[in-house]
Length: 211
Image (cartoon, rainbow, N blue to C red; front, side, top):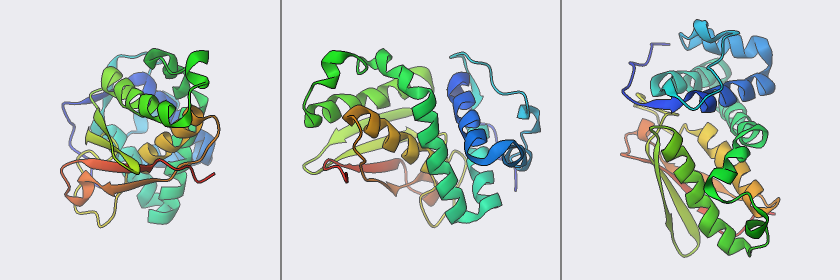
């Protein structure tokens, strides 16, 4: 696997740390170490990013971890692990950011589902835009929400893919929606991906829950 050239954009250390720890939970210590070695990031073995909000974790390194996951476990296996890691990252730690966006309090929890989604999905986008160089926007449409990542750390520096690859982001969104809605599962499909040559990464979130 070729190294991905470093970018001028960074993730908050804390987000990278949460994600790496989620990968360890999902695949075990040895699995994670193999991923970090393949991603040309051996210095992160037993040395995770600090638990702070400094923007110091390069998008290229985050993308390399995602690519290594695919290379090691194949597209289907990598997809499943990335989705699980994204969900675990939100469930374990990222939901604590909900308070930052005003969606963690009791007043929010008693709102109708449609209003929760209308407030909560843009709030999730805003959190990532505030604490990292990831830039996201949300557009509400008749039957769905379009969650667009304009600068995506998950596929940074990649091209030539024949399919979307940002499953860590999809897993985060799915678990975030489950938390926002009080336990519902929602369909989240990435239909544009910068790794496929698109200019943005688009995730379509259907308004009607699956369960």
